[in-house]
Image (tube, rainbow, N blue to C red; front, side):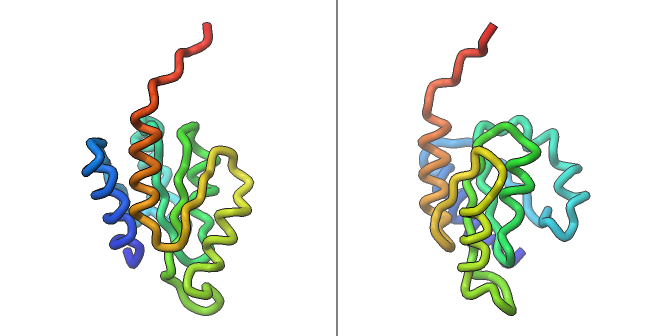
Length: 128
């Protein structure tokens, strides 16, 4: 829940660019069952913004479960060796999940703008 201000910045930015936004909060890696309950909703999204502090594992987890592009936003939230978000940033940059793009620490605005651009792209035609 400490990541909510950055997530809200991303959501409001995307909304101001004309995008429909669905918010899902408090589904972190420590309570993975809550994420799994939301998987049907996530699978309907064209792009997903994942905001996470601490070790920044959440974008990799979500990226491994869905086919939509993931915009990862590390936050400066954390304790111990989080180094004001650097640990999360490095974890996200080294994600093994394909389709994960990373913006800078606490950059909800940049994530919202990128999501808006992705949503404005024409839909891909399905191969037959």
